[in-house]
Image 1 (cartoon, rainbow, N blue to C red):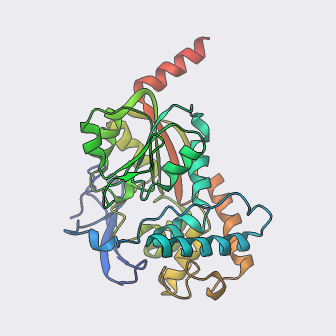
Image 2 (cartoon, rainbow, N blue to C red; image 1 turned 90 degrees about the horizontal axis):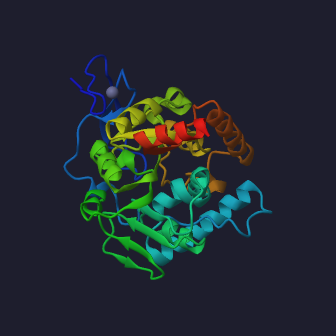
Image 3 (cartoon, rainbow, N blue to C red; image 1 turned 120 degrees about the horizontal axis):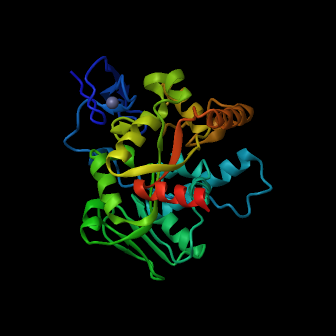
Length: 343
Ligand SMILES: [Zn+2]
């Protein structure tokens, strides 16, 4: 019997199998979807996840937002692929970035998700699961003076100077040091955690009273899940341990003392081309994958453009396959609300 690790429900949870299609090992993993909160989760924890995170998994290859404005979408993609490849050659990083980052202007998505909170230059920012720290450095370039990144998969700390630090650490170790932050961000990280409630508890501990916790993660109540099922690219077995729904993530965050302050759906064309490739047995890292070589893929330029349009519509109807939620400390949201109501 599968018991939901998020809400505890043990009735009518449906089990299904998901094939590893990113690294193309084609191993099959058992997952189930909770009949109550909707969370898709691995049925069994693996002893060793490290082998599913090869050294080139992490990349935050920056989508260069300058100098690409006059190019068509496909030209931009090609340019990004080239840059990502070059970066991979230089740094031995890049596979994941090519999939979820560079093909989509990932930096732009990340920045977009921050717009609603109007950060001050001296805000203390923590990027959890920051990879090689690309976004941390980028925020610093944009004038943020106090940015910290942590990632437990780093080989060691990275020193960039300028008041930015990238530390090999997990969130609990940092929380144990009594550090405080005005913004804690997790961009596509919490779905990889085996202990999401503990991660939220540690976040609560580190967040200042008026601070914001931003979580971007896939959406298990998406059209893509309904349409593609086990072939939905963002189940990403076995790396994604919990694929939340809006309801399940909010409930869990409430347990840790948070309340929602903003939610936006920010899915991309990846939900279509990635999942259609899986349906056709094409791995993400295959030679004819759109990620590897757009011109050699099974998609035309106009199909990709269509996927992009469809994704926008899905986001508007809250059915996009990923979202960005800002949480604040529960008591604080109410206080802010009361104050604004009485003034
Ligand atoms: Zn559940």
